[in-house]
Image 1: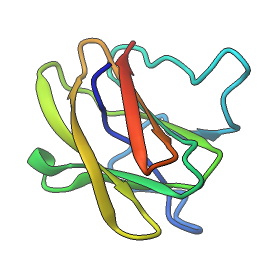
Image 2: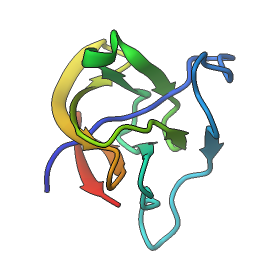
Image 3: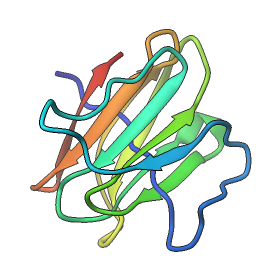
Amino acid sequence: MQKRKILGLGAGAAAIAGLAAAAIVPAASADGPPTASAGQLILCSFGGYDSQVQFPDRGGWGTYIIPNGQCYTTNAGGNSNEGVNVYDWSTSQNIGSTIYNGSSGETIVTIPGPSFYAFNG
């Protein structure tokens, strides 16, 4: 699997400028994390730490902090490959980068390590 991008919300920062159709949802079901649709980016923070993702080519757009145990869905749009950086928010450690393509959507899941995995919708 390829690594991908993650989204999050800072404490009390439920509204992020430029986001459409965003939602924080409970942890994934027994079937696993949700699957993104075209144009969506889903970040699930399941590593025991708060997670963050950024789109560096969008000037840092997508700087979301997702509390541990939660998932976040946003309409990220786009239709070409874009880099996404994934962070352990508690330590500000960059745990890797992945590629997002809005044509298929992307789900990013942080896991203990810290590490993450990602899959297309």
